Amino acid sequence: MISNCTALILAGGESRRMGQDKASLLLGERTLLQSVVATMQPLFAEVIVSVRQPRHEIDLPQVCDDPSNTGPLAGLVAGLEGINTPWLFALACDMPFITPAVIEYLAQQRADCQAVVPMVSGYPQPLAAFYAVNCLPLARDCLNGSGKHSLRELLERLQVCYVNEAELLNADPTLASFFDLDTPQDVTIAMNKLESK
Image 1 (cartoon, rainbow, N blue to C red):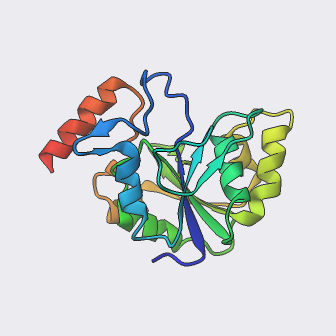
Image 2: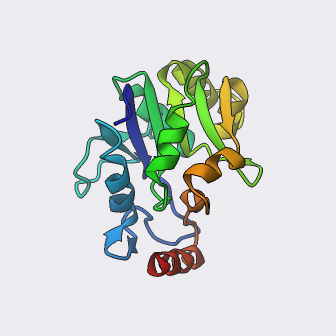
């Protein structure tokens, strides 16, 4: 169990490229949301879900984005506002292959920083990352300010511990943890991954 931390699953996206709600998309026997919940619950004392509006089919505590804001930064702000722990682990609901070993390794890197963010193929992965609750004022400022209203803008303003691919390979040799499903083609690839396990 990872102490002093709440897990936030982001399930409020518009899923434009997928053409349907990702959270309820079936992958094998479970929905994407059920898959990530099953990974999170043994690791965190509390798991909450970020949504745009309350969803009766989700049997977990929910936080709703401010209706005047959209995007993952709005979900992160809602999550940080809704927790009672000093840390939050944010995960997109479309990352069903994330492994407990990756999450536990990232959790160990939380000293002396405001965020722990994996770097894969040269890109930060802000939706599989730890955030300290003390970054909430800056996150609100990014959300309500005149900038890009993006997670990338927030990371530029935080003290971030970036965890590189070489370190992550020990926890997940194929880096499948960072495969996210954005399109129907990604679902086909994910089904093939499931079948080859």
